[in-house]
Length: 285
Image 1 (cartoon, rainbow, N blue to C red):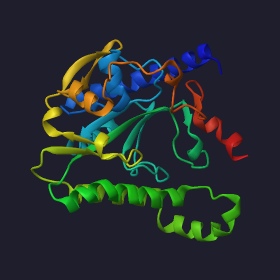
Image 2: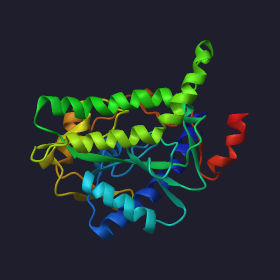
Image 3: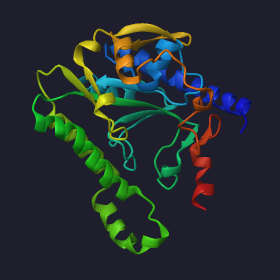
């Protein structure tokens, strides 16, 4: 794929992501739910006033209370063309955080090609829990989700040919410990260990096991600021620039040209016009 084709593909993905972000924002504004753009989406909002030109995903964080309420309301109020995905709505979904996916689209990442879960284009929504003050509480908040993620990976993985003899044991494991079980346990553990009066928040994202990026001072978040993102206004943390400086260093400086590539759609089956179900016969053949 040449640079022109890559840019066109990324832009088409971004158009779907922007649509999803607008729908999420409308529900949150209507019901008073708090959310913030985060990761590269926040960087794009501040540096580019929209998507990073080569970015192909979108991320949001929400305080736990707002997160749980949002999911309940979104299942009812979002139009049928969107799917609210978490362990409660999709038994094959392995992540402990939620995604809002668009029906009629496709985003099948290589490691999920054999998993029969909903795989439309999506926005990630991560819950924010208060980080406990104790050392053991901090350790648990950072390590328990990662531990369950590794167990879930075994449950979901397609075994290499050289250890296919383990498939009977894996099938038994899968019947008892479904992906939804691990996602539920991870959320329960984070709620259990969460602090009550601390000054730091923790992002539940076991795929990015990095306390430096996944912990935020509480006073850096509220109140949310409205900033222009493409042609709409969305929420960012109150001290977005301080967070970006801590996470990325000189965040306003562009990376070298050779690094300006879409990271998430590499090797991924992406289609903004065809439903992921249309690709399943080819992938399972």
